[in-house]
Image (tube, rainbow, N blue to C red; front, side, top):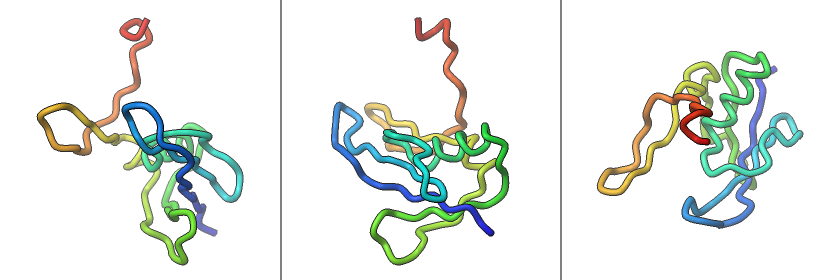
Length: 99
């Protein structure tokens, strides 16, 4: 049986705009995120899952896509002024840089 994630819009807030809740097999995987597909893949990978997962948008009668956890976990969306939105390699935040 293939895992299924559902992306549900929950609120518009801050400079990031639309936020989403991500459900996996009916349970909340991520309570709030603006980058649901890639953060969900990282959460599933951290939990030890691999392979393909169906991606559904809340309220639609069919899946939007099938994503591969390992591939999607290594990507993220980059937004910056003067550039188009694009997919880039994901890198964990260095806690020393954030502090």
